[in-house]
Image: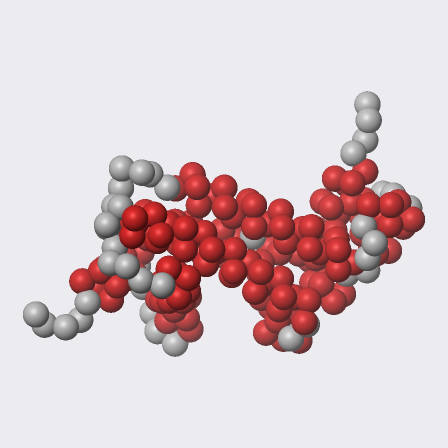
Length: 191
């Protein structure tokens, strides 16, 4: 049986980054967790940054799969968007690496952790941007800057689902959906 050492290393590094964060993870720890020599790591990755980038890319791919599983071409744009954002947020809140990176950014401001979270957010915005452009092409949405709109939609959803509960009772999923549609689909102006 052939052992995939690269996979062992990536899995061990994922575990280490999720447990200890970027800053506290060392190549020695990764080697020990993967049960390989430290030199073996360097046959696949030139440094810790490259290994971390690989893991963040995997995290992004996992998140996209979660979002794709929720998408249904027969649903409206806003129904799909709400379901996808809920799944992405749920994924982020349950994935230990994303949680640890957010803690490290908050507590220490580690530049590589900031870069990793920004890359994750950028991937989410890009994913939503594609869905927005498709909705514009199908005339489900008015023409708009799809990148800015995707950013605003993500930030609004995060604000309602996460930020609000820091100083208020958490909003139920249905209430978030209702508010999201009010602000973005219906608008506040009395017509």
